[in-house]
Length: 314
Image 1 (spheres, rainbow, N blue to C red):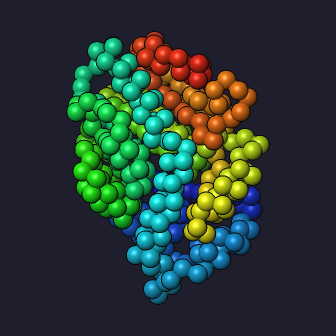
Image 2: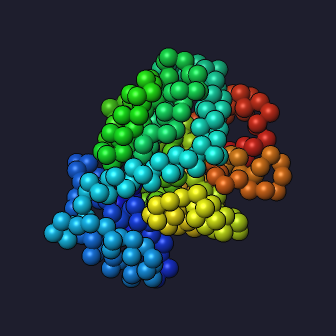
């Protein structure tokens, strides 16, 4: 899910991701709006990011407007590179383990089924496709990916069809779906929301049928910036991937910020998996969890030996 570029406050210290600026969507109609290349270049130069400005300045235009087909093909390539990162960090397996414990807890407290898992800002659908192919969920678990970008959703649909997977993808705001999710999920989305925007995003989860949310994002640590730089410059080919990957790590919210926003909801909220085992080594991603208070005890039980990774829920 892309944030609305108009909501980002400009300043010399502002960190902007190119992918947020080269596409723009009307959040009510989901229609795509034209993006003026010169305006994006000016904005990036205005915050002192001349490298990003040069990347955008090299993109093709029609009448001064960025060519949407070229931008879409670029974003699909970028998401392919992001998928490789997720594969190397075994992200699909980690998500599956966590969700199995959540759903088992819901079974224990007698929640009605089917369960609906909705991945917000799914991109080309890697997480949902991994879960459909390998997680081994029951048939009464629906797997749905949503994104604002139609080109990314079409690619997710193409890949899931080729792989004959039992999941689906839609161009829609996750919180406007006819039936809310049982569990809302995202990866690398939270840092796109700033200030009041983060508060508003979290409050939208508070729907009667929603039992939990699980959001994975970069964990800001002293090693995050140099680690992100080294990894992306070694592993990524697209200049946009290299730029935005590093900026994402630098923009990531700390646990206190995430919990302050999440605890405005009626969920019990906490962080999960912030360290490698019990060592003082931070994980690349940390996990923001929100769960209905009545399911907390059952969830602690279903986590089993992994319960030590769960921070305080409040």
